[in-house]
Length: 224
View 1 (cartoon, rainbow, N blue to C red):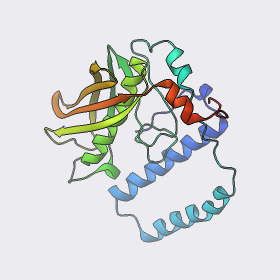
View 2 (tube, one colour):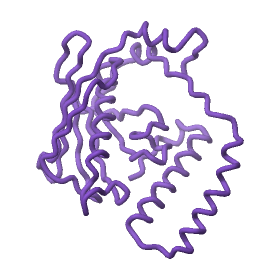
View 3 (cartoon, rainbow, N blue to C red):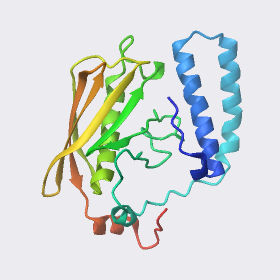
View 4 (cartoon, helix red, strand yellow):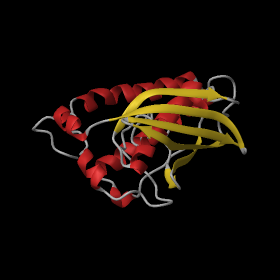
């Protein structure tokens, strides 16, 4: 599954990263799902190995912290609006070869998305690996924070597997805020396949004081 942001919102570098990430993901699923000729795999490996030195001599990415103040001061996302945050995130991340990726949107107070996991995500035969599903929920809960305009980090995450999550089939994931108690935010969510709940998830997030985050950023940090 490839989810690309609108081209007009992307820099040339971001577009190139997304293209490469899509290609790497496609090759990864193909290598796992099929039995290609070893010579083909050796040729692909040699091509990538030759590119590594060229990449490593390029300037490092400027990993400046996001301005959380700007995030909190922005308007809440509208109904049906797509949520996006960081092209290089490891779970949601269209420019990250390890990303799924997926496209969350706002539905009421829920963050909702439909994800089709592939061969590279398989655990038991025909079923998605439970750790992949857990990571997806942890990430989707993070998008609930965007809806609630809150800064918080995961305290704990619990995933209950009610049934198998198939690969190569669309599964709907939903997540929402259940309640607050001081700095503690209780989250809940579920995944449905063919109308049936196959996964339930709960999490506790700890709200972070923006002033504390600013102190972590340091006086020289600039927003991206």
